[in-house]
Length: 150
Length: 150
DNA sequence: TTAGATGCAAACGGTTTGCAGGGAA
DNA sequence: TTCCCTGCAAACCGTTTGCATCTAA
Image 1 (cartoon, rainbow over the protein chains, first blue to last red):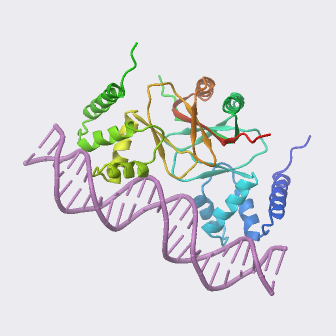
Image 2 (image 1 turned 30 degrees about the horizontal axis):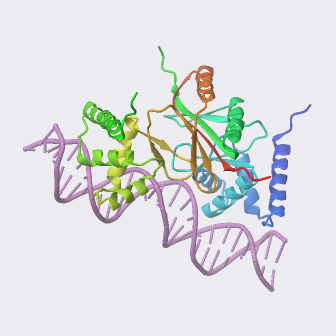
Image 3 (image 1 turned 60 degrees about the vertical axis):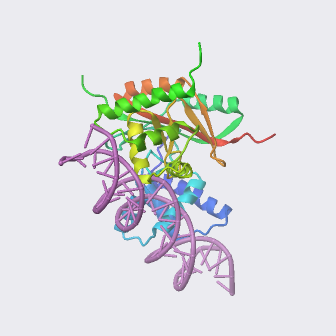
């Protein structure tokens, strides 16, 4: 089976966003799609300020207000997820089609390792059952350093 | 075996703080111990602003700067832990002698359920081994609602 | 045509910083 | 007496809001 090209993948993403906007009677403005494209053109985590600067460098006329506005829509339709890694500003991550994952953050550099562990899902189910609650989202983050040499 | 009174427990806490201050050549100011006392006199999570207001209501002369300063010391000696529950302000929790626990946050009210699950520790060990890293701290938080009635 | 979206700048709110005065050692 | 710590207020910075203008529908 052929791997999808990133263009094809982005078309799928664009379609999800388009349908979300139509369904919720939001306008399909060029700004919104430009922001979507910029986010999906880069890997890793980002914050609003760095996205703003990146778009400015690409000569796009955009305001922070619109970035915050659009991120909100992208969160709502699940194309982007939000993290608060212990700092007082939010970081974001484009959603991938790959499975759920968690994070390890290096204390000094802020670098990120992503990992997956099925036991988190088991814990979630047990918590839901135990307290009769419904989990909408969660966050598991480990913080630390590279292991010191012996 | 008799349960310790809260006074006895607080004496233990005061001692930890005192020894920490002495060991690190920090002054044992009355403000620092008043803040410690105020924090341990109340249950649940708190943020700096509510602690500030609480102390003002108790007619203590205290500044936000000193609260931030002192909280930093309390974090450093492990008497307080810091959380960032998806908001853009920090919340704190006095350390208990009980075992490690994690959190469930109600989306609407912000209310907190604490729970413990040993599998988190297993995940931590595996992550450390897998990536050759050392975990200094971590955060597992579920967010959600009460289960809707059928 | 019009209500929703945008860019800009000011406002907001939690946190940090600068500084003169105060007090622990 | 020293210099760390305090209270106060201003600065800082990520985020939100108000508003005139623009534009998708």
